[in-house]
Image 1 (tube, one colour):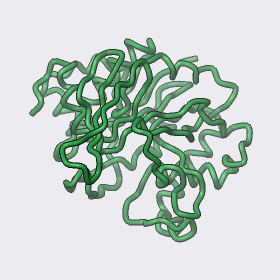
Image 2: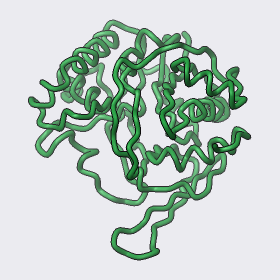
Image 3: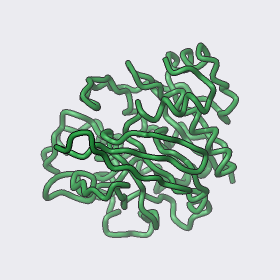
Image 4: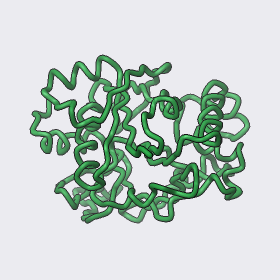
Length: 281
């Protein structure tokens, strides 16, 4: 039975998702000894070639274009994001078992290998923990009185009828996002894959802990886009976070041999490009 990771990459004005995907695939090989396939648009792949990125780090490359572009404020800047084709992961994945992984997750452990050969057809990422100990209610529930927040950042699935139905439900929710926003009481202006995953799990009974809807038995460590990567090694990362209303003061922590989701992609890509031996332009 084939097993591998699926990485999506669609470059925008500043974020080099293609390079992040190549860096992630390299680390997946180093830490997890598994292949990774890339889902990307033609422009992103052309940019990777122009930068001299070795496309052989990927097991396969699948061409895909997001059917929706959306602009959002990211770390005080407005960027365009093309990330809504993730709902097509079921048919795009070449593997029998797939771990769908965001390219801004720093892989520095073998922990994700625990998900393979699961008795469950899908495993969700429900629990998370800020590396700085901050509480983020918007990452616990999708609205003030809403359902549990489920991350689309890490998601295991096996090719099965249950998984196929889940992804078809995700597509249905994306097509009717405004209506679901009214039902679940959240802002519809930005399509969020996390919200699609959360609603699909809820619609199909996943929040009732049915057999197919298992959760990862550990927390996803994360830092928001206000955190910064200060140092990155193969098995550890140093992260900084400015303290609100305290001049020139910030928290610093080192995370060793645990995977970390770093939302500040601009900060991360500088170090990822350095590991790939590519100039940060």
